[in-house]
Length: 168
Image (tube, rainbow, N blue to C red; front, side, top):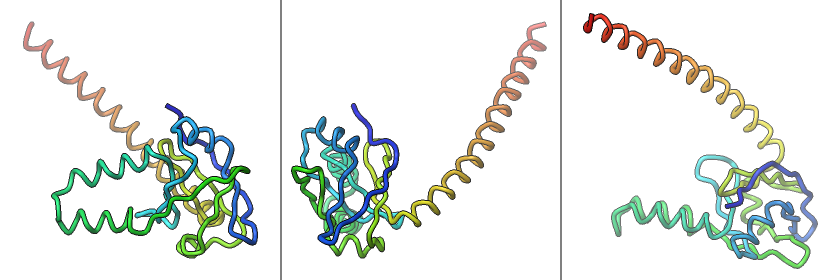
């Protein structure tokens, strides 16, 4: 299965049209889709976007919640109630509705960011800030995971030493 990878910055024209990166269009084509499902991200000043795989994932999340529950209705409202299907034209462009552009403060440029099974659409400056924060957090996490791995190796060695002491 193809993944949405890399990041691209493109201009938005006066009619709100923007070219979707060719690499992203190729992933959508493999999913047999000529449209993009797009909704405001739940945890970032961005739009989440993708093809049928993203919609299937969202449906799976909703199916895990109790029918007719407030949580299910609220999540469905946030993910489906504020979403749009954006049709790719013959030149590989979509029209980003003004409502979605306003949600994330887009003016004349947009950054597409691959996240594997989906991608996000960002205002470029906000994405640069988020990218810097993500890199910092990943460095901290890597250091923490590295420390945990060393601790686990040390703990495992202590257990092995204990076992050796018991058998002799």
